[in-house]
Image (cartoon, rainbow, N blue to C red; front, top):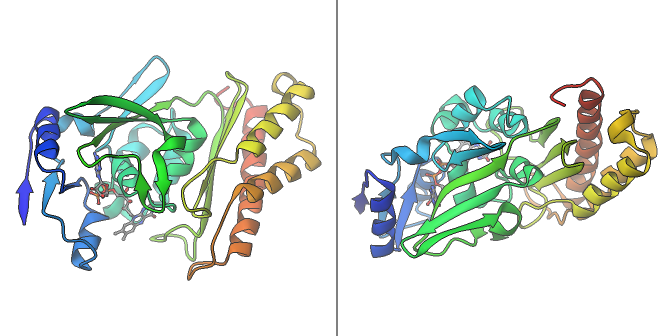
Length: 291
Ligand SMILES: Cc1cc2nc3c(=O)[nH]c(=O)nc-3n(C[C@H](O)[C@H](O)[C@H](O)COP(=O)(O)OP(=O)(O)OC[C@H]3O[C@@H](n4cnc5c(N)ncnc54)[C@H](O)[C@@H]3O)c2cc1C
């Protein structure tokens, strides 16, 4: 099997244009499983680990530019204060070895409905920066996933970075698995409470063909917060509001029965996670954490 090892981003793009069948490999924690189980036989591998630009992150104008090759370990070590939801999700990924190798770009590249980076990226309203020799385009993460393990990436394109607005208020992430570590989510949920934009962001994982937001739940909650002036007063949320938000989150899912859980359980779990995360996040907001 061919192995192409570019040292620069420009060379990586050129290699992908010349060989669209080359399979990009970053941390390899998904790719190597696929090769080892003979689920995939690519013409060759495009090793992105030597492209330094991909491993960098920077904060500018209230947005984190996260190179596609930034690992979960880096997110946990460096970005917990600006992207607390993504850091929480990163802490639940695999094991220390997987978090040291696995990247956010690789999670997007695999586009699994169960990818743990996806709910916080959805909740934050992140934008994926994609590039090929034909040019660069930015895609809201809400539009990135097109089906189970499918995305908008064209054969000659690579993910360069993800632009994630810094949190201006509390974020939460919750994941149900069959045990506490080294586990794919049975269902997961990410939440951002954004007082600066008076916005609420959500992300559902492992409970639909693609990761997705619970749009109706978001607008319901924003409407309630506006109507009661709770952004300003920071009053406790009435229980019926929390319950309705949770039901709307569960209703936004489109889960299946599989070996990890059945659809009814996934919906129930989502409602529980939505209720808990909203309660935690709103309590943080009331106590003045971050905002
Ligand atoms: C034991 C184990 C436990 C795991 N636990 C979890 C877990 O708890 N949660 C979770 O979400 N995942 C988990 N995973 C899956 C995996 O670790 C993650 O999906 C990880 O984010 C993949 O990143 P990577 O850098 O290793 O990607 P790779 O395996 O290198 O690549 C993954 C996919 O993305 C593509 N790709 C990579 N970089 C780019 C790029 N820049 N542009 C375009 N395409 C690209 C590759 O071609 C491939 O299709 C686990 C895997 C293992 C083996």
